Each structure stands twice: as C-alpha cells, then as structure tokens.
Image (cartoon, rainbow, N blue to C red):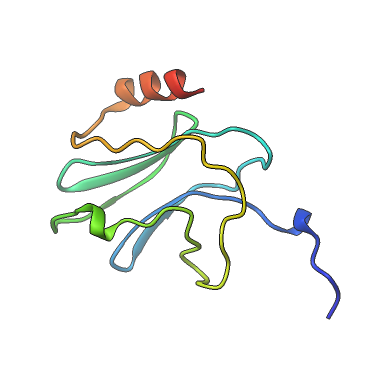
Amino acid sequence: MGAVSSSDYSIDYAVEFDNEVVVSEAVERETRHVAVGTFDGEEYALYVDGNREGTGSHSEEVNVGNMSIAEDFEQDNQHFNGDICEIRLYYTAFKGDDIEVITNAMS
C-alpha cells in the first residue's frame, strides 16, 4: 500500500446524537473556521463560519459528559492533529443573529 499524503485528508464538523448526525461540508485546511453547535432542548443545529449546515432533533437531556472534541466519529483510530484556538460552552440556545455575532467575534 502506498503512502497517504496529508492532502488526501479533509476536515469537517459534526454534531451527533444517538444514531443521527449532522455533518458539514469539508472545509479548507490551514484556515481558521468558527463552528457553532446549538441545542434548544428539542432541535440541534450546526453552523460553520456563520452558515447553517444542518439540523436534527433530540429529546433527551444533554450534558458535557456526552461531548467529544476533535474526535473522528466515523473511525476511532484517527485523531485531530492541529490547533484548536478557543472553545466556548454556553448554557443557552442561540438563534441565527446570535450565531452571526459569535462568528464575527471569533473570526
């Protein structure tokens, strides 16, 4: 088997509950991105760079014990090798205008 170039890999963002997952399109590597996941108790949404990538529904309680960061949800033998500049956790549900403010503040 030949060597795999790092250019063969892509980065995407995902929010997953149970067996339902919302995944972003692949994003440009070596570039800063702002990923925001929201959950209002019923619906969750994924935004990347201010763009809504998708939504799903979830009716169970969510806590930080259920959260993974920089994990490959498709393969557990691949790990993120890069920099995460900032992580913020808020215990409130955000709407579209709020996402724009957060994205602009972190860009």
